[in-house]
Image 1 (cartoon, helix red, strand yellow):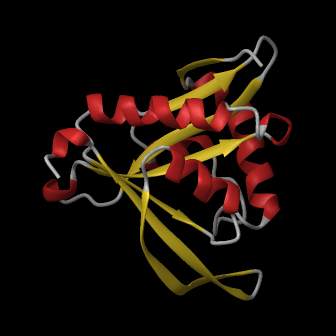
Image 2 (tube, one colour):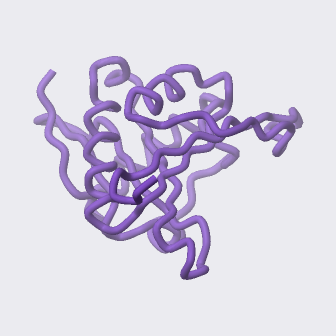
Length: 164
């Protein structure tokens, strides 16, 4: 499958929103239950680290980083979000877009990427590990989704430039 990876633009939001909603509907992607509007989503994510993967007709997936803290000491720590449209899963889109996001984040001075993933989301865990993330812990009963307590596996990836 041929696809291109490029920076996300505001005009991409309708397709990004739909892919995000698809992920929410699985019940294994996020604690979110509704997609936020563009303004809220835009405000909560780094402007320079957001990507879309596209083929000739549509957006296949997206990835972005968000700050984990407003403290200056944590300026280089970001949380990763990645969502791939159902028909594009398993075709290498996730690996390509996450790899590019890692490179982009390092160019932007991010030294630690973290991801919180439901343990049931085996494909996402496998994807992150294939891109150099490692498990750092399991946060048990972190929150409820549809009245069910959910655990979250915490993974992180350190930049080689962090000297760690």
